[in-house]
Image (cartoon, rainbow, N blue to C red; front, side, top):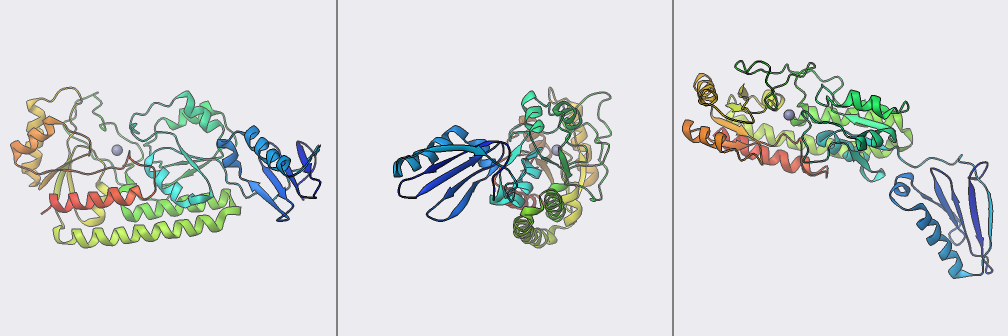
Length: 362
Ligand SMILES: [Zn+2]
């Protein structure tokens, strides 16, 4: 039974012997339905989003509606089986998509960097520290992309926080550098990640490894829900395998296709499918100079590139100008650092990327 020592609970006993018991403490809510002779557990994560008083009132009203009532307060224990999920926080979009896919309907997953904000150079907020101070689990991509994280974890002061690094065990590719990058200047993605290139999620095969790592991490932390995590991860990994097949088939005829990008996000994707990310041309955020255009021109000639890859939403006239000056197609590839939080969004965006790569490499 569920009851015991510390917090209060209430019984509503009805004249027709129908009754409800509402038991609540800091973490768990249950009520007993005498008709069904069963206990119902309100999961912790739902309680967090609802007003506890409201739940209590509604449950009591249900009982009042049935019969005259009286209430007895007594103490409870919380030795009940724990069907709730830990409070899980992720850093930014790709790990959020993968974690939510593994968790499924078992619970809610929170995200620190709301879609639309930029993970590179992100500045953590006091709200982030609060979220982390109340979390049980933090899932990160790792490989140095979440540069804000170490300071944030210190600020959150949550000694119970367990961390899952989704990139654990992945063999990294060193980051490329634009040789002509100006000394001491930060050009968007121009900063270096000590641990190698972090954009592993853009390879559908490494994405499977990340999902499996998140699954295993959650099972270790929350074995009660192991079956759910396994089932959900299996289904998602199967979808990733299907996506990998599509990439293999569509890109096989254009193997060796060279491209220039303005964001060093695609070396894993390129390596997987035999494409060549030949150069990363950092474009200054403020002003573009004739020298910048010349650098793109040189790289384009040197590597005989087929296309320039940019990102959706970046309608940079200068990049369009370079594209038309050099007569190189300009295609948008989504690095998935921002976007919708539904786990299926990954497939939608990646299939769009596959179309764009196919067009660019024809
Ligand atoms: Zn990036």
